[in-house]
Image (cartoon, rainbow, N blue to C red; front, side, top):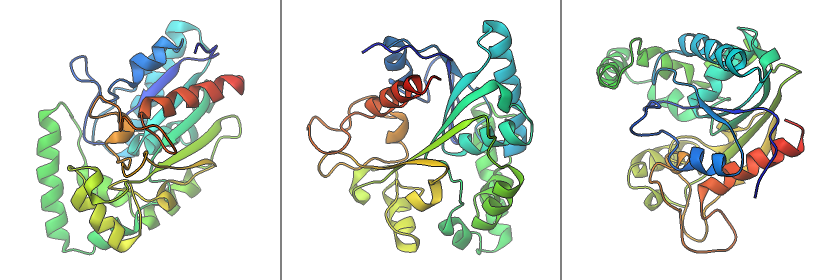
Length: 270
């Protein structure tokens, strides 16, 4: 399958990891998209800087890509917090004229009830966890990690405030995708968070529920084939392999989701 995508694709990562030349945040996805004719670029923003800091970086990144390639606009696919960073760049920082579309993969547009509950813990404890997290992120290259502030940006109240201040740009096409784990055994790395979020909110991808990530043109909730769920890690091909060898109702290879995304964007003229 070859497609004729008008604008290049900018992949904007989420928390916890950064794009680099050795280990790619997106697994096999970039190469699979290049095979079908996509030109791929990366956001390269920090792992855990606040939305405003990363938004400024993404704005500059988009401007550089457009200037270097004369492509006029970019199609953005953003995972998790990367979607909030990008929405801020588009709306508050006014880069929407250079963005054709924004596809968000499990981005907490509406905040998380679970985060609301967890932040009811003593503030000194939350700050301590934030401090330890910042130390870890500095090791992988972050210069301005701000975990405490980032944690609070995921509350339902902060999400409401963010959405009011960052309305969708009418010139940008927005769409969102949700995924869920079948059960806590779907991902050994996220089994405990899955149980916690399930207790407070219901089915989730190990971190976020469909209600948390639903935004604009919502494309639906995607599940794995058979008993295999799709976790927050699976969404960006962390394991670099198919979700399942089975064929049937549901997703067996996450790269197919991304291929379908760019195929549909191409059909829309983007």
